[in-house]
Image 1 (tube, rainbow, N blue to C red):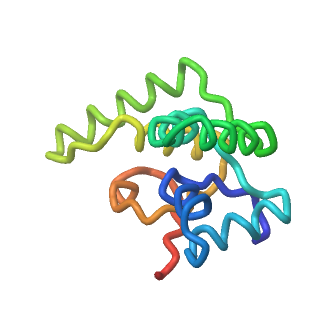
Image 2 (cartoon, one colour; image 1 turned 60 degrees about the horizontal axis):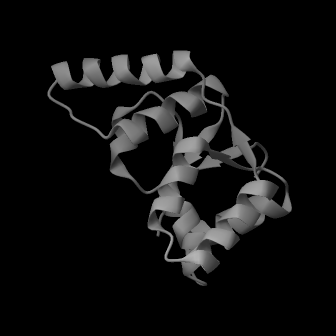
Image 3 (cartoon, rainbow, N blue to C red; image 1 turned 30 degrees about the vertical axis):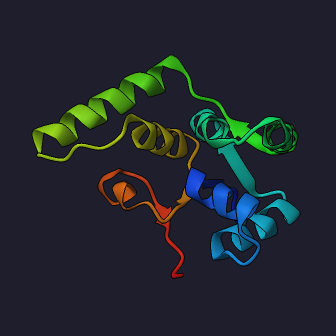
Length: 130
């Protein structure tokens, strides 16, 4: 892995919960090489799914050690306009995915995900074969 990579929520779940997951292995390698990235939306989604105090503590430790890409007001507007354009074309996607995509594009990083929604978003996706 030569460049920094933003990992989508599904990848972090794989890393945290499944010892044999391909996405988790990619994150482990990226962490070793100091290439793994988070963003606020991914952090919020991970916290939403946490099952108690222990998992919250694990996530807080993770969040304090992995760089998180910032998201300013302009990116919120960009995500909204992007979703508006897609909806006109008959495609409805979650706000969270659009926001992750515009954050990645702004910071010029790829996203690792298995989520098919990203195929409609203007961002480079690494979708490992599982």
